[in-house]
Amino acid sequence: MTNPQATTSPRTRDQRRADTLAMLSTPVRDVWVATASVADDGTAVPYLVPLSMAWIDDRVVLALEATSRTGRNLLATGTGRLSLGGTRDVVMIDADLERSVRVAEAPPEIAEGYAAQADWDPRPGGADDVYLVLRPRRIQAWREVDELPGRLLMCDGEWL
Amino acid sequence: MTNPQATTSPRTRDQRRADTLAMLSTPVRDVWVATASVADDGTAVPYLVPLSMAWIDDRVVLALEATSRTGRNLLATGTGRLSLGGTRDVVMIDADLERSVRVAEAPPEIAEGYAAQADWDPRPGGADDVYLVLRPRRIQAWREVDELPGRLLMCDGEWL
Image (cartoon, rainbow over all chains, first blue to last red):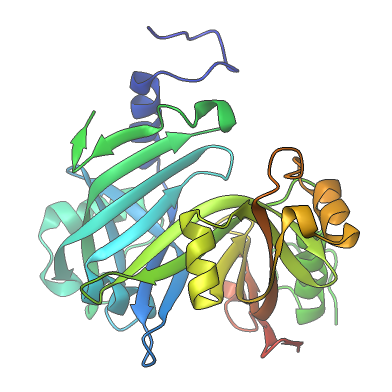
């Protein structure tokens, strides 16, 4: 079913999954992290920042101050929507917060894994920062309009 | 105050403003649009998609279905957070919805302006789509950590 020589044909699901996993594992991978809060008047308020990520044991791991706006939103709502790649090579990930670990107390697989993939290590001086471990629930990947059909790669945490 | 030969020095505010306006005016410019809604249980829910934009009369103009999730969120909350550029050449724009115009009823400056900058024109077949005109309220621009100081370029709708 794959069609390796055609760069203009829509990719198969298998290709998109392989491309997505490769993207998630790239060194110095940044991710746009959208989160939300509710204002005092009940209005939903969006937030968005770029952050460095690591892909460890099928989870997206972020490192940030727990008191940052993104940290507070993720801890309060338990959910974020992440995008990788460019606007014409899109990977969208809806993810749930699975675990929050203080940097000073993190197990080596998280701390070493994060430092190995990201271009910084929060441990020196960031003992009060947290690693937030996000479990992908839904993943979509597409490039151009012709790839909108078939863009769903993961649903309810399961690869299709 | 400008320092044109140094690519590693933090840019001045004037440079960042010029770079930001150039980015906003680029043909086929995409923008990440973060919006939010409130779920039935009161939890804030983030949303994020890439969309084509146009920069018309100091406003960000999007074209989309009013019933799309981004359309509904913007119409309900009146606010979005947009990002242009990459994760290491960031422009963040907090914007307020100023005006919503049905594509079929749009004045030429919006319809022609959008078609001229974006790589598509919603008019054929999209009569029920809307142009959403967003007024920037707050703009920040930075590349790397050394540019975090001085990243605020617009506050309360006024360029600093």
